[in-house]
Length: 218
Image (tube, rainbow, N blue to C red; front, side, top):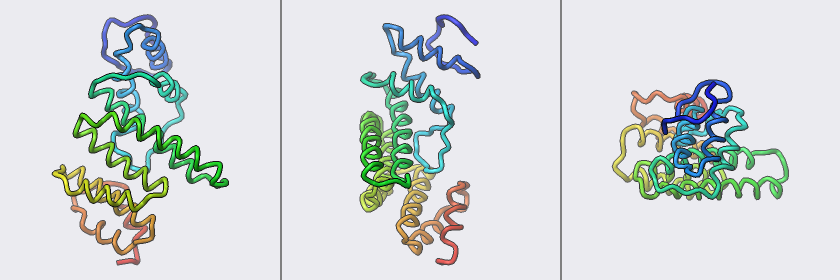
C-alpha cells in the first residue's frame, strides 16, 4: 500500500485501500487534472466498458459512489474525461434499468429510474467532440431508451447508426442490441433473422442466449 503523495501522474492500482487513498489525494489537491485518468482506469478495471451490454455485473465497491460524488460539478476538456464520463454514464444507465425492473409501484420506481437516466444522458453528452466515444454513447443511449420504455426510439437510433461506416465489432454489437430489443418486445421472427445474419466469427455470450430465447421461432 502506498502512503503519501506520488511524483507521477500515471494511475496504477493494487489491491486494498490504494485507490481510495489516491482518490482522496486527487480531490484534496488544488489541481484535480489527474481525476479523468483515475476514473477511466479504475472503472475500466472493474469491467465497466465504453459500450453497454446489459449483462454487466458491477462489483460492490463503495468507492464507485465516492467517485461519482467527487466528479460532480467538475469539467475537463479532454478525451479521457469524455471516456470516463461514458463509463460513469453506463453505471447510471444500469441503475436506471435496475430501478425500472423493481417489483414495486411504478409511481415510486420510475421517477428514480428517470433521474438516473437523465444523469446518464448528461454524462454521455460529453462525448460529442470525439467520434469513437460519441458512437459508444449514442449506442448506449439507445439501449437506455429501450430500458426506460421507448423501444421504438431505440430501434430507430440503432438503424441510423447501422447506416454509418463501422468496424465489424461495432456493427455486430449494434445488431446484437437490435435483436435483444426485438426479443424483449416479442418480435421473435425478426430477432431470429438478425441472429442468423451475424458472422460466424462473432463470439459473444449474448448471441448464445439470444439463440436459446429465439429457438422455435425459426
